[in-house]
Image (cartoon, rainbow, N blue to C red; front, side):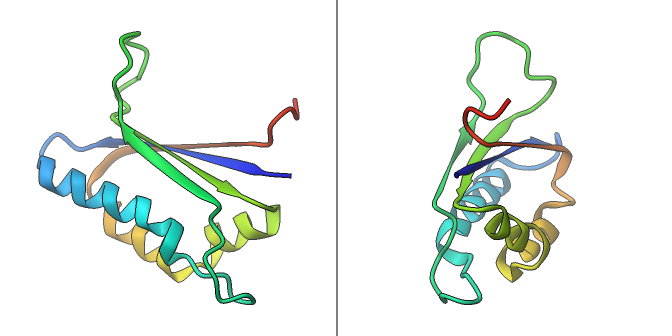
Length: 110
């Protein structure tokens, strides 16, 4: 069953729009750059994201949101703990962010 991995960012105030765009493009490119160690193929089933545009005012400072989809817990575990592309991405954005938040869910499991 699919697992959805929601990642929320609040970029630091001093980060330029160009730096934000570059970081967001790198985040989205993880769908193609994360390669499964066994199949040697991309395993992130879907990656979408964008800048917040909610009119509700309940963002708590969050500026950008991303959703990745994984086919299994094992794929998610590899992504989080071992995937070199993902780990390099984390290292590359850590100084650009004031806040990051992650929520995962499996549809219809409550």
